[in-house]
Structures are given as C-alpha cells and as structure tokens.
Length: 124
Image (tube, rainbow, N blue to C red):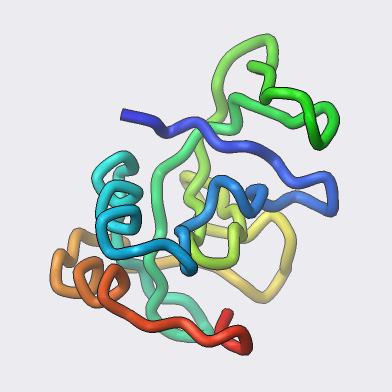
C-alpha cells in the first residue's frame, strides 16, 4: 500500500498530488481509498475523511520526481480533501491551533459516499 505522501511547498500540508482526486472518475477515487488507510474523524468543522500517511517524500522542483527524505518516516493523519496534516497521537493540526481530530474510526459508508460525491469548483 502507498502511505507515503508529497509535502506542499506552500506550507505544512500534503501536496495536491497526494490528496483525494476530486476530478477523477469513480475508479480512480476508489483506487485512491484502497491504497490508503482511510478513516472518518470528527473535527470542530464537522466529519472529515482522513488517512494515516507518512511524510516520506518531498518534491524538490515541479518537474523533478519526488525524492525520499532521509531518516525515519513520520506518521500523520491527513484530511484527504484539504491535505491538512494532524499529529498522530494528539490529533492536533500542525497548521492551526483550532483544528483537531477525535473519534477516529472506520466508516465504509462515509468513504463510499466520498467516492460517489460530485465536487464543484467551490467545494473544499
């Protein structure tokens, strides 16, 4: 399974290439969820789908391939839509003092709903 993600240059977030493919077809979306360890979590802004990921890659330049970072892999929770990263043990977002996770659990109905969802450009 592929739990390694790219890190964004804009901040402490997952790169868009590592997030859920909102413009992809149902097969692409389903494959994404099968590749990751996907769960559902509660947040102050509502229920979110999150994945257990490792920050093992970082893009050096846009056209270069992702390179594995040296050293040990660090695990985080990642919001699959926004790329927001959360500390594994505490559930606190690394980019916000107001976002955190709790009640992390498997919910195949919520994951299936995400796969089937139609996204508009104004959606997050």
